Length: 398
Ligand code: ADP
Image (cartoon, rainbow, N blue to C red; front, side):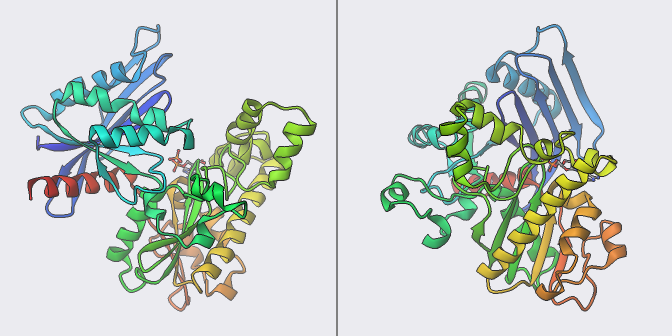
């Protein structure tokens, strides 16, 4: 095997990982990908090669599996040692949800940086602590290895004040209550892929729709993020699998003030019981809703599509038009129905969809004479992190 970069994406009860080998300047090749999930309960570990062939798999059904992130990382690193053989772990990249107002790019983790990242926990209390959890375990397992934090927010830094602020007294902006935007690693990767697959429009006015379990959209101009549908948290904007997306803040005041719900109850409602799941009462998963005959499934899809179309118009307005619309992530890459419905009647925005190309999940799904190109681009946040770590490695030796 080849000396490689380990990419980690740690959640509350899971660690996703990938192994990325440097493949020339500015390029990495994924050797393996996997995850350990159900940490503390029914733990399942799986590692696959780039073609999806299972390389290793273990299930602990009896509670004897890893009970915390340290133990989970131990399982991954034991497997990795065998997988890499004589080759080394060159560096480790961490997906970290929040870089706050200051981190506008990836950063090498030092004790000082680690302290700053901990200070950001109140901005993302549900995710940030888990993202940071493996850093110490990595240091213990691979002493002195270069560790890099890559943020979901940093691609969106540098927005104009009007796109970043909420219209509440300015002191809150100064306290960090701002629209940060998320899914930045995905948008950065897609923007980079566009320079390869559609170089003539890559520096133009682009709207990217990242439609997965979490969903957001981003307006990009000149390769830079101008506006995101996600705000202070990853709750704003589009309806998602289980998250509400945009909601009148007055509803929350009513639920807490009048209906007597507690903040944890409302948090649970907005993060876990809303979106496609809440509206359909059936499932948060678009595949289930597409298959369902239940009218509630159809209405949930109607809402999902409507929110995307409304945001498409708004984002195109903020970048002065549209040269390309890009669909990405699970739904964006795979649901021809959602793409068709988003693009229906969007001729006023220069969009003309090629029905056959769309049904066939082609890369370009607009007609040859469409003023705005419509594309499907497979995203890879892991690759983007791998590329950032590679850059940090190159700088470390320079
Ligand atoms: P995550 O945000 O967890 O990374 P993904 O990007 O994997 O999520 O997206 C998950 C979503 O993609 C689910 O709603 C799933 O139903 C949807 N999806 C995946 N494949 C298809 C498909 N072939 N058709 C429609 N929806 C799909």
